[in-house]
Amino acid sequence: MPASLLLLLALASPGAGRADDVEPPAEPATPLPAEPATPLPAEAATPLPAEPATSSPAVEAPAEPPAIEARAAPKGDLGAAARKRPQARAPWSRGTVAMGVGASATIPAGMTTIAVDVHAGYYVLDGLELGGEVNNTFLLWNTSTTAQLRQAANELPTHVLRVTPTVRYAPLRRQGLALYFLLGLGPSIFTRGGQVSAHWLGATGLLIRLGGRVHLNLAFRFTQPFPVSRCEEAFIEHEAPIPGGALLGYCEFRFGPHLGIVVAL
Image (tube, rainbow, N blue to C red):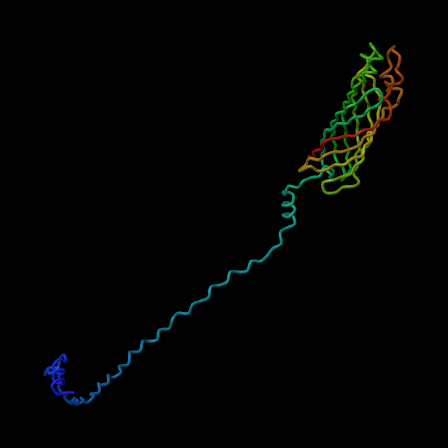
């Protein structure tokens, strides 16, 4: 390549020929003299003044409370507490007074009888009651019977008042339930002419607790007036003919259900 062309290229290159673009030579680094290490003066250890020993007062443990001696309560106190505690009393317990009301029905020949009774008794022993009953029996005559008697039907008795001393015994007693048998004997007073005869009463039943001192009385009763001749006189003391013995059904053996409520006092 010719020398003139090289010269032109060199002049055309940017920054070519500038003196300030040339870096000056680096000066050699001169090490600084090291200062000798001066040791710090050691501080004299100053001992702390010892605190005088102070004896702390001894802490006394709290004294235990004196033991309380257990004393058995006197038997009299326990008995008094038991007496004060209310207890439900069954209507068949000793010392119980029992009050009750009830109703029963029978269907003898010629009529229907409906009886309402009030009963009271006292249990002299557990399960054994001595009491009494007042019973008013209504005689509802059949229309066929009264039609046959015509005018004489107005003379027929309409109800019978019965007073019956009773004995009740409950051999089977459970909580809230008792099976009992009842027997009674007393007079019967008829409304027609005040005729009086006797009667006997028997029953078997259950006392079922309904709640508190109230019990349900379910029974089946048997009864008959005696002597039968005295009972018949209350029905046949008139001149009309007797219609086939239809008037004498009350004087026969009768039985029927009984329903009542008993309260123990």
